[in-house]
Length: 299
Image (cartoon, rainbow, N blue to C red):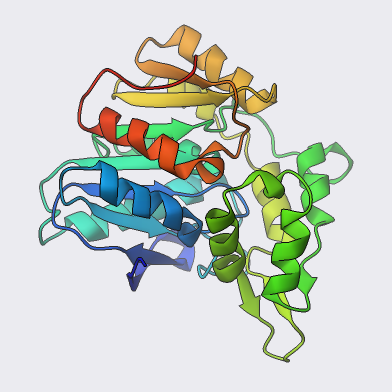
């Protein structure tokens, strides 16, 4: 069973970022979640990385603004530059002193979390030493699309059911239908446990990442992450699933333009790969961080 220390870190816009420190006195490893999820959904990956990394890495996960235990102050948008600010603030906090000071910083990012790593590295070159990302959302800079022009994924997010009678009811519903039924049961359980809050009125449980916040994240995702990825010079893996979705194609297009983006294909996985097979992917993450070129995949 993993244990952690919860610490709050000040970011921009008055945001106070919830972080989860799993300990260790080696390189700092930041775990960056996807839209709608939370830092503690990484629990199975944390457990696996503890086995796979032969160094006492300091594993830290965070809840981006509007997700998990990190609130969203009134009037603050969910522009993706803010997610990057959250990551920069957390890395600064954990590298300011102690065992992680002056050492390498490794980052693992899924979807929006991978994009936040790329935007953070663009804003603060050299902040991250190596990064392993699974289908970071790579879109060209463009306008925020809301209302009738909103992306279909944002429309769907606003329609999400936000309240259940219990966490068990939420788990059973998610486990019965895709895409969340594809998740490793441990990852799904961690998401349901920590991605919901007890209703103060005693009326069941509610999503911590409110549907309107999740939708707003999707409406703001045209943040120039594609251009930022194409300009990167750091060692970074950009993994792509085989589900035929746009995120995989965006990743492949960027990798065609920048040889520094190490494309790894997982044709049997979906966009939820890190939550689908955390044990398997932890092996590849560890090999990459340790500088081994022999990343294992099924491409």
